[in-house]
Image (cartoon, rainbow, N blue to C red; front, side, top):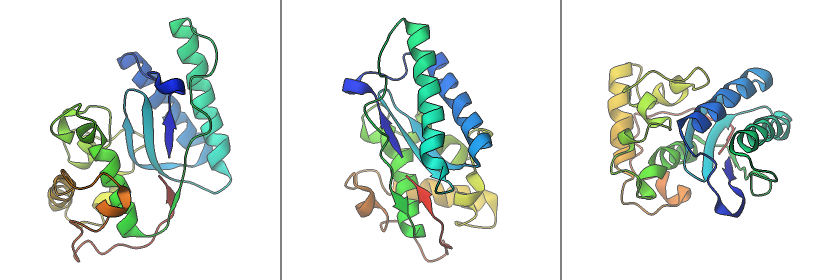
Amino acid sequence: MTCRGNRRQALFHDELDRESYLGLLDAACRAFGWRVLAWCLMTNHVHLVISVTERSVSRGMQFLSGNFGQAFNWRHGFTGHLFQGRFRDEVVDDDPYAFGVVRYVDLNPVRAGLVRDPSEWGYSSYRAHAGIEPPRAFHDVAWTLDRFSADRRRARELYVAFVRSGIGAPPTVRSLHVRGLTPDMAPGAVSLCG
């Protein structure tokens, strides 16, 4: 799922804005039964890979974006729409594609030229996937890591290698999902939005 700032405006001016969004994301997960598999807050857009029930997507995004937009406008003295139209979502129904989506999201700050390594970006799922910091309450790292290995340390190593193998690859999710996926990452199907 992707949400963009209206007219490409910044959604996050500082850490307080980012933490406010993440707090609302946590509340949306609890209220709508979502599981976040990957996430990244950029300056003017957000990427979310979430496992959802079909009917909760629009209601949950209305809750998340509406409440964040109101809080953002109040805090910064703005009026009007913060987000550019409706969020963009896509059903991902096979694990190799899902792995590509998760990697794409975790590599987004690198592709945007904001950092050289995904571990340098503090507002994405990569640092929790890599074991650099604990996951946020809403972030289900087990979904991704368990598919790499039953051993958590080994799973993190494999995930880091998988993500790094995507650096320099074409920036489309479809082209990323095959490169770097090995047979020992035996996935089971899951549906999610990304």
